[in-house]
Each structure stands twice: as C-alpha cells, then as structure tokens.
Image 1 (cartoon, rainbow, N blue to C red):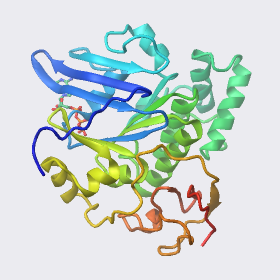
Image 2: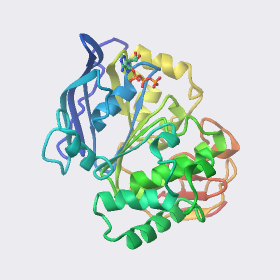
Image 3: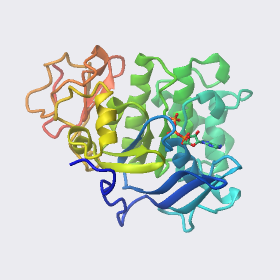
Length: 340
Ligand SMILES: Nc1ncnc2c1ncn2[C@@H]1O[C@H](COP(=O)(O)OP(=O)(O)OP(=O)(O)O)[C@@H](O)[C@H]1O
C-alpha cells in the first residue's frame, strides 16, 4: 500500500520523555515544518530522516529553543521533569533545560566549543553551571574522568584547535552527556568526520546514552546509521512526518512512496531483515568486550549474526553489536557471546 496520507502511526505515549504535538515552524506566512507529532520513550533511540530541506534541523532546533530570530514555532513540546511547555518558554528557562535535561550534538563541533578555554574546563563548566558538581576542583576531576571514558586521555589542558575533528566531537559529546540528560538530540553528528572516526563517535554516542538510560533523537541522512543505532524512525518530507514506525518495519516494508525512494537510493537495499527488529529499548545485559568478529563468525546462539549492510570491515556488527575495531565490540545478546 502506498499513499501520501494515513501513513503516520500514533506518536504519543503516556510515559514519553519527549512529546511533541502539532509542531509548526514558519517564516512569516511560510510553513517550513507542518504539524509534526512525535514522542520519544525513556531510553528509546529514535531516528529522524529525510532529504535535505525536509525540516529535520528546524524540528530539532524548535525542541531546543534555538530557532533563528525570524523563525517562529507553534504547537507543544513537553519534556518529562519540566513543568512547562518548551514552546514559548523564555531564554532563561530554556538555557537551564539545555545542557541539563536536554543536550545536543551538532555537525560542527568547533561551533559548540569555546576556542579560548581548555578542554577539561569546558566540560567542568557545564557541571558547574547546572550545579551537578559543586566546586571547581571536583567538577574538573569529574570532567577528566568523563574525558577518559571517551578515550580522550591527556587532552584536559589542550585547547580545541589542538584536537582533531573526531576528538572535538568526542569533547562535545562529553559535555552533552556530562549532566546525564534525559534526552540527547544529535543532528548529523558524524557527517563532517571521516569514516573510521564516524564509527567510533557513533559507538560512543550509543554507549553514552545506553549507560545513562538517556533517550536519543538522531537526525541523519544516513539510513545505515539509523539501522545501526535506532529502534524507531520518523521520515520527514516537505516539512511533514510522512511515515514512522520501528526501524525494521519502515526499512523493510515502507508504506510511503517517499520512504521507498529513500531506501532505493540508499545502500540499505540489500539489507536482510535480520536484527534491527526491536522497538523496545535495549535491555541491560552483560557486555562482553573483544575484537570485532570476522564476518560469519558471530558467536553461536547470537540471533544477530548478520553483517552490517555496509559490509565493510568497520561495520561487521549490527545491533545489538556495537563497537569498532579499535575499541572492541560489545554484545548485548541475552545468550552472551564469546570472542570468535
Ligand atoms: N532561517 C530560515 N529562513 C527561511 N527558511 C529557512 C530558514 N532555515 C531553514 N529554512 C528552510 O526550511 C527548510 C527546512 O530546513 P532544515 O534545515 O530544517 O532542513 P533539513 O531537513 O535539516 O536539511 P539538511 O539535511 O540539509 O540539514 C529548508 O527549505 C530551508 O531552506
């Protein structure tokens, strides 16, 4: 079945951490985003895809209260733990929410960093502003600990310009996650990075949100990335959400012809219908670290043993596999896994 309307599944749930209703974004009389409904459950990872200009970034910026001055948003954006609507909230309230309940990672890390401030101080500053650590010394120690967890040992005293693009994006991710946000919004966080670094940053995003039970709204052009890290996906076209559902369902049986076109143009065409099936948040299961298994050497008992559609050496894992050759992989399968 393919039709333009009636493809959007209900997008609100009672326990959602983010509930967006009727979001419309306009410049003067021109609607750029129309009547978007979406919700993200606790710990859920949701992808937002669509071609350039379809309204993904404006949707994200509306949630964050970061729209340009000439652009206005109407509708409702509710975040769990925040007792007022984010649409229409004043800048002081919004800046308290950003970096605390709600955090974001954008494409270009340099724009998010202060070029004149040392890395550890920037991470510590986030904790101090939001009072999640008291005392500069404690905050700085916590910052160094967080940086080490994203494999950024030894950069504490560096300035942003002394780091590579991938290292900067890891710093931005560290800042975003420093206060254990309820929801992390990523807008094309790896687009500007080369492919090996992309895999590492994606892995750190996935591990970072999973460890904190944070929900994730992930905006990207890359359907393979959505297949790798998201459980549910929304497809935007012409400023509207035209289709949504579990990633597996939308990617294997798209109902909207625009989604069909997106899939046809992607390298997901040959993806089998294997592992990307769960619409449930990832379960907390023992993590086993090791090197990435060679294709075809996924452990016995693991139902997720197909190759990533990219079929490159870097991507032999698919959910619930996570990892890179350099950081090792983690298998969250209930049967556990042994290193192949
Ligand atoms: N400040 C603005 N004034 C007028 N039009 C705008 C403004 N910002 C964005 N637009 C338009 O709104 C539409 C949606 O833009 P948006 O940036 O949300 O798209 P997108 O899906 O994120 O695209 P991309 O993937 O290229 O970032 C586009 O047609 C864009 O040109």
